[in-house]
Image 1 (cartoon, rainbow, N blue to C red):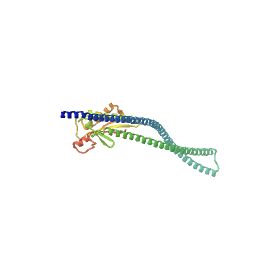
Image 2: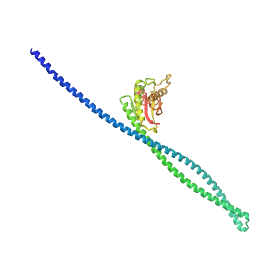
Image 3: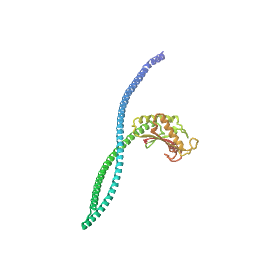
Image 4: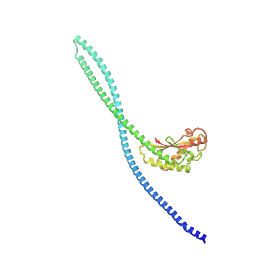
Length: 341
């Protein structure tokens, strides 16, 4: 009797503890749901503000691109005009120089004739007997000398004016060159900004893969991540990594103005171990085929073909010395670099 009463009492007292535990668990679940809902609202607001800012920045970039395009067109037209004017100036200066030389020779001849005439006049004065034909000849020669001197003066004035015009054109050409250099510097700065964005975002995407290395402004992907041994066929894991790269490239390239001449360089490298198969007679063919395979896969994912370049370097540019398995593995790689053409 006493034992049964104790068991009955202990069974009856257990349920309040269960109820309290369930109530606490329910309150904890409700609190976590509230925290999740609040965080989702804050995150959606943050993403909305970011999209608005990105839209505004894209609009500003488009306006700047249009303005720069117009400025480049005007600069090219002005440069063509200056080149044409300079060529005409050079031709005219050459003609004027030739004419000046001819006039100098004629002037020298005229002065010689004038000296002879003076001598003849002295002789005639002595004789005091000048014929009408001699007087006419002297007058004609004197008129020729005066005409030649006037032509020489006009040519000298024309040459001086032409030299002044040439100096003005050269000054204008120098100003245009400075403006073109400024525009080129702005284009380089723009490309560097997009390179930095591409570099940072690609580093974040590939941060989970411990085999991916960064050397300077290049990303080094091990060949084993993309290809099987002695093969240029992409594996499933490599396709997944390239899908991430293609998505990033499409996002970044949409922001780069069309007049910024950028490309993605894809370089294939092998180790020093030789290969000789019907498909790949040497490491040249293997490294090139792997780079081309990456380019073709990215092109299939929508990346513009004209914005990519593939190159194979064989075993001639190692990043690790020696023949240890680790060195050979580091040298078998695909390098990616966003740069200008």
